[in-house]
Length: 223
Image (cartoon, rainbow, N blue to C red):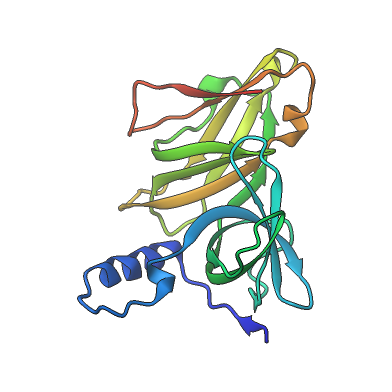
């Protein structure tokens, strides 16, 4: 039987997790203790429930994750999401059944290109937690300053480097004049496949303005 999944904002989910961790109860729901959390692609709804695609680090083979929930209309097909789940089978392989505990939309976009000089791009600070590649996606977990208004948060490639073996990409972050009030978690996933597939491209170099590691200006993703 397919059930509807309730969406929780990522910051609220973190608060619930913190409260549970302080609880002295012995019988704690597995949804808060035994789970995986991955950025995956939502593939749509079939007769059984929502279907997702998981990609491991680098060029690992994809695994389809079959759930028995309907995640509703908040997430569109092929959008990247942060999925909290556990396997409900032990068969392994390229198709697995899962129990879903939470599914949250994240920043899901494709790599863009710009002819603007890099120094002119808005690059407000982030606090990097991790950045990694899975297949054609570069994924990012960081913290950003919270505002109540929309912001710009994109990964853009410098046009002048597109024909080189190393393509310079910049995390563009603009609060659009708003003042941040506190730091909160942010997850993003950018499809870089159009460039990654080019035989001439050997490296994608991602530049970001980072408070966590201020001495590191960029990270290289090498084929």
